[in-house]
Each structure stands twice: as C-alpha cells, then as structure tokens.
Amino acid sequence: MTCNARCWKRRLAVLAIVTSLLSGCATVGSEGGALGACPAVVEYSREFQARAADELALLPERSAIAEMLADYAVMREQARSGLPPRFRGLLRQSAPHLRR
Image (cartoon, rainbow, N blue to C red; front, side, top):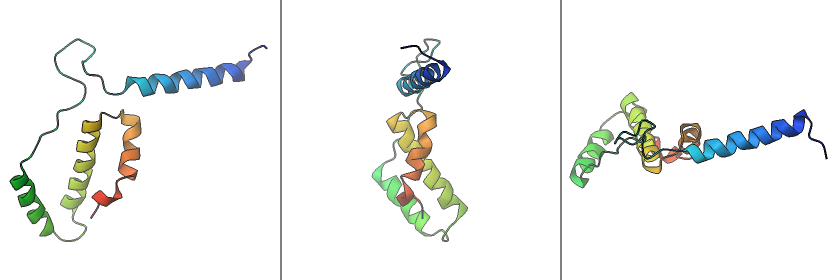
C-alpha cells in the first residue's frame, strides 16, 4: 500500500494531537528552574471563604465583580487540574454552575 499526501496529513495530524495531549502542564520549566509551569493555587480558610460569599451575596445580580469571580474560580480549577491551555475552554463551558 502506498501512502499519498492524504495519508501523510492524517499521520501528521495524529502526531500533533498526541504530542499536544502529552505536553500538558510540565512539573519543571524547560530551563531546569525550580518553578513549575503550573501556577500555585492559594488556599483560603473556611472563614475567609464564608466572608467572601457573604460579600458576594450583597452584590447586584449580574455584577461585573461576580462575573470576574466566576472566571477566577474556573482558572483556579484549571490550575489544580493542570490542563493544557487548548482544553481550558472546555472546562469553562462545562462549569455553568459557577455563573450567577
């Protein structure tokens, strides 16, 4: 069986997809530095989270700050999961419960 241009395009596409899936979030930068490629997630105490929830409840419906906080919650979840950037939009679409 001979491979034509279409066959090679398919192989290259598969190789590109596999490479991108395997790249993900690196644990060490390419320079060998001590910092990881994924940002650290700040942990908040339960009391602080409760205070923030109370303050958020005082904001008007559809407030810009509430919208930004929903985006921030998604970014925190992405940082925890270490998803590559090209898949992060999928998490945003699958998390409508984070919207007010």
